[in-house]
Length: 619
Image 1 (cartoon, rainbow, N blue to C red):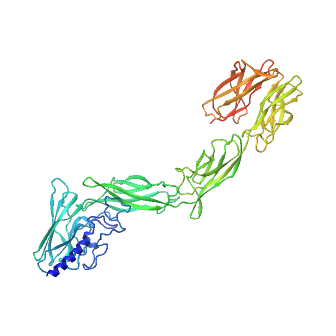
Image 2: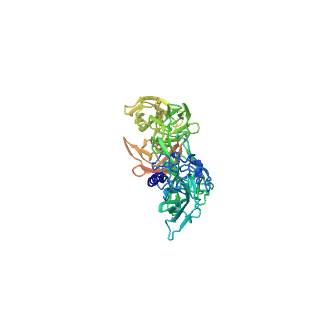
């Protein structure tokens, strides 16, 4: 008798160790119902070896627990069905499988094994017990662990759900009589048919609290790429009450989504959620995006528990891109702006497709975004001053760059046809009708044009009938200083350059003789460039020829004249008088691009004078 009692006790202890390894509370697995009858998932033979699903062990597996813990987990719990409908009492074969050995008849008191919450529904208590005769009664006392006056609730009516009456697992009815949610200290008692009884105090602690239930969870797509840049999360969350066995929608619950950056959403009235986000990849070489959905639920004791609803790591696939320009280059006149157009495409499933919404740039200042057809046009806001090669490419800005496309570039060359500037800086006609010509020529790029040939032209009225009198070559630095006989020492003279492939034709200012020579020197309109609405200041000095030297021409009226860009007519903006040194200063409001010039309209024996033409860029 002693030997058989020890064997029975050892078997019961082994059963107890296995059952104690099972979690005290858990969420139901996908497709299961919290609180369902454990008999529905029981083995068909009480003597069979317990499976991993029937008898959890203390060794963690890769499958997450149904019950979220306070420690965040990257793997969501399994999803029970929406409406748990546990039965009471259970029917069918029970889930736990007791030991296949039981004490033989004799004066041996019942021996307890594993005691705790039903793994599928914390609203039930399970007790493993064996004896040398059939167990006739199992009872438990649950005492609140918190509160000023903790109450104790007696739980009776246990029924056998697994094994035999001599060695089996017993389950309580739903503990709907518990006064509140929380943690309870458990004491148990049992009696067998021999009249032997056993009671054990403080055998375990169980938590009876509402638990979230998930259904229809999903995260899509499986891969993030240029055609799938949004992450969609959907599902439904309910709250299962282990005391009542009811399940209700978890409405208005704030959800936290992590997909490189944090996002928030609320569940609907039925507990459902449908979230659509576009995660911004963290880094230019991101290979995957971890996505998780979680929330904090407030426990009955006022603390909070972190619950992971769903999680998934989405691989990131980057597609090759390319830029096809309509033209590889362009020729523009000085003063015009450079523009480039084309299409940006990406390679997907072996086919090049138009890339919509891709940010592109050209140089430092031109920006554009491709349209639905992948087309774009880039225009540099500033005119180039010389030949230049632009790099057209997908944006290098770390915020604007498309992380799902490889960077791509193309070259765009701009050939600027430079403006030719000719200054008829100083001239006069002597008593022998010799015209003195002095000045310089250069290009808008600051270089001397290779074709340095200048033609001297004359007109009676300075407007029409210009005739070419002859030509000469400037020095290598573009300057000239020479005299030439003119048959008619009365009228207007100017210089003309025919230009070349890279330089536009150009004209100098005109001069008028048969009177005392005058000139305007040091003319400048600035600043250059100038913002629209700001002030343009025109300055210079008016001089008259006194013998062979130039002297200040004081108290004379100087006209400031303006020609708008693209216009042929000139507009007088105002007049200003020179001071005792012949200097003048006039200020005007900048309105548009154009050429500024100062003009002296002589009277008496003096000659009209016209300053150097100064082009001002208004931005």
